Length: 138
Image (cartoon, rainbow, N blue to C red; front, side, top):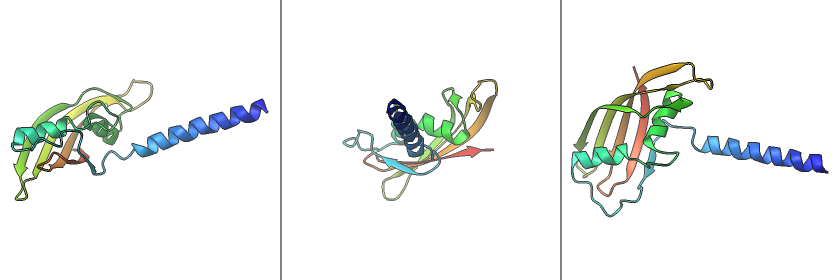
């Protein structure tokens, strides 16, 4: 009976891990969010860029996590942002492009440090809702 309880416990833990990874594994897909600043209108390009850079900050869905996931890093350093631009669309939303690089380890033993370039494309609505796509740049 004790072995059955242990086996069920191990299976449940593995299932939880699989579900956790499945829920946040696709870092290149578009995702839409309004992370708490719904009352503040986005009226300048710097506000739109800031909104993207601070996307879901402090969570496992943050911009940094999405970039690291797309680049294949197991462990990573903060991104080094290069050029950022934002242009306003006719509907009042903003198209934001951010380019940069990130360094990290692609292996679990931390002896294979790599640096890759990335490009973030995002749409920020006037109300602050963000839709992001990340890709590895060459």
